[in-house]
Length: 392
Picture 1 (tube, one colour):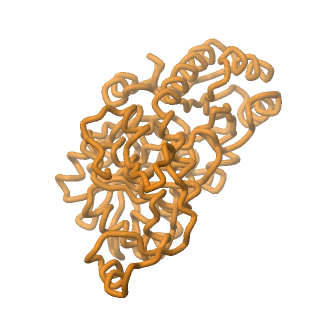
Picture 2 (cartoon, rainbow, N blue to C red; picture 1 turned 90 degrees about the vertical axis):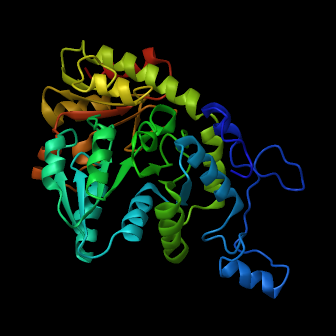
């Protein structure tokens, strides 16, 4: 972390980690908008390209602004290394293509982002990498799905959109027993609320587009973990294949990290209040939010998270028609499939984020036609409730 002390606490790291001031003495991190770098000599250029000497080479894989973001996020996750990518999906793709080969096997939760499911079943499968899908919280199912060729376990916890949880410590033990890597998508909690590496995970995935940015401004991703598999293998893939985060986006994400802790606390407070209100509404059949005592894994959430996050979903009586009516009645909440914004957003997962799944896949993932997902923002929660009440 550029000499920055490792024993500082989370909020200090979120503001300070990774920054290396230039001779200009700037207080805020600069944006290095350059494609290439000048070398002092031919010998220095050769030493950089051969990795004999550290330093900047080309902004596809070395950029000071991106490096500051990588070092700061690694510090927040308690990890050795971070590789920033152009999107959350490119972070997952880079991890898989860097660490897997034809004939390898993935065991994945079926409660993952619909596009991730398609990546595994439609594209990695073409390369001879097969995937078995299991129920997120069923340890026996994970155990039964293990094969000699299994190399990677993949999950989101909490899941999107049903906020189901997995016991990270148990899955880490299972993965390591079979000489596998445990990869956890930590998009919805962020390191402000959950640190999977401290619970035994090997790699953490982020869509920086979401809560890390926090204001819906830029697209980006990150892979965080050990120096060998992330700092060497995933970095090597990015250097060659080029799913690169731009310097400008990295600078925006750095600004997001500075307020991450206070934002996630506020998101959690608002989401819990909304979830409790939704449970009292006659049209609502069920609410999915780990902060509720009614959530089947509420105790686990209290154990491995320090907060419950800003994402919730609820199922309406009346199916898709009732769901669309509710969404169309809102005047303030943004109708968009993105999340992690200061602005509350609402979407109908079955016809947006999970629409490319088959009806059977949606059923297996618990995506009912009456399911609504809300990413609760930072508005006054009374206004959010009033906006939803219009469609109730």
